[in-house]
Figure (cartoon, rainbow, N blue to C red):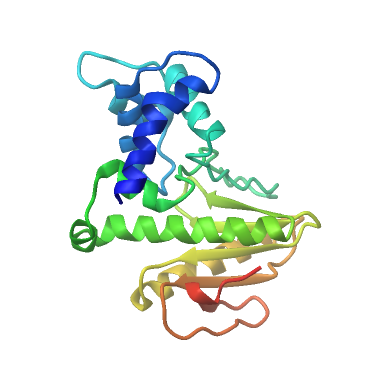
Amino acid sequence: MRVNRGYLEDVRRTDISRLDGKSRDPVRIGRLMQSLARNVGTPVSLARLAADVGGPGAEMKTDTAAEYLNALERLMVVEHQPAWRPHLHSRTTLRSTPVRHFVDPSLAVAALRASPAQLAADLEFFGFLFEAMVIRDLRVYAQASDAEVFHYREKDGLEVDAIVEATDGRWAAFEIKLGDRWVDDGTKSLRRLAKRMENSDYGPPSALAVILPSGYGYAGGAMDVGVIPVCALGP
């Protein structure tokens, strides 16, 4: 934890200015990383981030927040998960804001200076961190298979945590849950998405699955939903 905190200190005080020789406020960079950490794994807006960074009486423009975010991306500190935008033969309205992630969720913990006891006491936040860890792993395996990882969100409430799409058009969808009691919720979302995609040019999914921290896994049949413990993930 000390090493990660030291790394983020170097980023905000030194690395981000060395990136392109442009001076940036290290205090605001630190606040931005803290805001990103509090909102890890969510499609938090630039306006919200700018408000968090600016604070009372010190507003930050959204363009400035976007510039700071871009610098952190170039330094490979943060990596956004873009929205999946399939062409649907319906009036479904999709959200386009990316989901914000650190390249590793341990950096979010370091930005907040959170302890293991604090994480264990806040299961909602811990769930977002687990989701971020799974997205990180899916990205690694997807890149090895020449695929990309997206998220899916509709304005009517349907959300799916991860869509992995290959260059040949095949796709798979995954919900990420912190325990068995949420498997049914994830299954419902995945089946709703598969049903929605019946009216698209993408065809049926190659796989639908809920990813859990541990336990037993099983594969789903055609258009059915499997369960995958995170330790069983692979390319």
